[in-house]
Every structure is written in structure tokens, then in C-alpha cells.
Image (cartoon, rainbow, N blue to C red; front, side, top):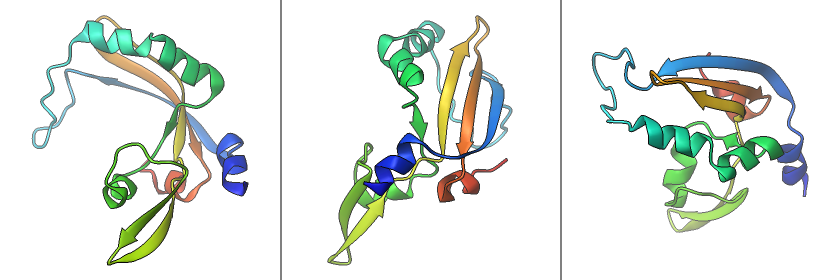
Length: 127
């Protein structure tokens, strides 16, 4: 399938490393106000499942919520058929990026490195 080839070998526009603190999001309005448990975040980042996704290059990210809202579910297949106004519509779930590495330090600063893909969702990412 062409889409599978695209997902397995996407062209990278750029590689970017970013840092942010879980507890200091810098927003005065609209902050998520989540009370993160640092040990749980670290446990998730260091889990066998997360490490395998990173090792195999399958830690894909998707830009926006529109596709999931249309499909009515969180985890989409590469191709989904949904009904819009009573008519079937084919959605292609194309990744915007891939996480290559992620970690969190003792003060809650997350460091992550991503590849931004040369796909329509990747090009749409804010920079």
C-alpha cells in the first residue's frame, strides 16, 4: 500500500529538540492545570512499550484533533471510513512527526527530539 510506504519511510523536513517544564507552562489563560505525578511520567517514558516505539521508529504524532473527532475515536487506523452527512468519507491518518527520544528530569523538565515530516500535517505544524 502506498500509504504504508509513506508512513514507514517519511521524508523529514527538520529535526528539532525542545524542552518544557510540566509544572511551569507559562500560560496565564487556558493552562491545562494538570497535577502531574513526576514518577508516573518518568515511568511512562521509560516503559518497555515507549522504548520499543522509539527504537522501532513508530512513535508517530498527529497534528490536531479533527480526524479523531470525525471518526469518533482516539486511535485511528491509517485509513478510516466514516459517515459525514450520511455519506462515506475516507480519511487518511497521516503523521506529522515522530518522537526520536524523550526524557524528564527531576524538576519536571521534559526534553524531546522529534522529526517533523514533509507531509501535509507536518508542514502545518506551528514552528
